[in-house]
Amino acid sequence: MNFASASAAFVIPHWTPDFRQTQHHLEATLNGIFQQTDPNWRIVLIDDASPDPEARAYLQQLERQYPDRVHILYKETNEGAGAARNLGIHWVQRQDSPLILFNDADDLSYPRRLEVVRRVFVEQPTTGVVYSTFRVIDQDGQELSLAEMTGSVAEVIEAHRQHPPQGDNAWIAIGTETGYINHTSSTAVRTDLAVQFPFPPERVSEDSHTWFRYSAGGGPFVYVNEPLSAYRNTRDKAGSKSRLREGGKRGFYATKARVDAEGFRAAVRLALTHKKIRPEQTDDLLVKFYLRLGQTLAREEEVELASEQYRAALAISPELTAQWVSERGVAGQTWTIGRK
Image 1 (tube, rainbow, N blue to C red):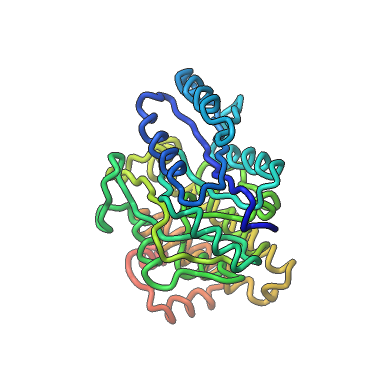
Image 2 (cartoon, rainbow, N blue to C red):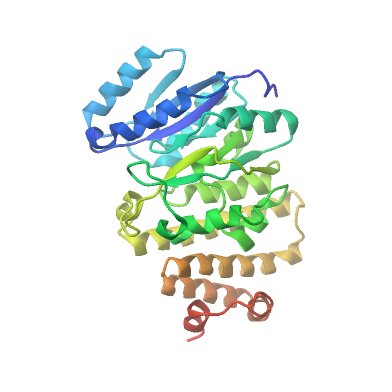
């Protein structure tokens, strides 16, 4: 693959019910890409059947204004960001572009993002995924402190400050030690890998599901300890749009738990197929995964969901569960309630 000279593609899923409310975020997203220090890029933006006709009018004008830079795809039915990204990935494949940078429509790419990412792929051509740390901002673009972030987002930033997973089997550390680690708008991937492992038909945690499979079935993960993007996180910890669409905070995290588990189990199957793990490791990995997921859910104060993960681990192996809890010194409300 010619990572050095080939055009890279920013893949942006987009949906809005009221374009006047979201236009300034989209424009900030586009401006961040137009300011890239590496000029060899294109944008494919996939509108996921936005109901507001003003959105389509704006996007049509954008494509006319920048025909060599911006390509718009319009979906007839709304299926979520993952399905939209899949459509964009296949468009990128047809352009023979070997490199994709994911960017959600309200997040920011900083000017050096493509430059740094391309350098990694050129210097380490077997790389499957490059991800970086990122800044967390509110709806007005103001940076949030760790205490102001939702628990699961703060968990990612904390993991970046310690030992973010890298290498061939990054999915194991992500699933059993750190939890979710690479936000979508900080993730870049080889196009062939993205085609091989599409996003699942889910509206929550579809990215986490996909990263597990990228790692278990593809090349190494490489971490860049430089904020190359910014992620918008509402200050209202119960009120993000994706949570509201899933029936509130409880519904959102129940879906997340299910999809994360399906993704990790898919990664286990892939790793067994590729002989990256041995069959006798399976139960140990699954126990550690469920208990680690329980910790994330407990941090979001979803205690009953956290306890469900404990019970899932027990169902696999009471002995391994007890051993893991003892070795890690895990204690507190998650496991106390889980034992009731």
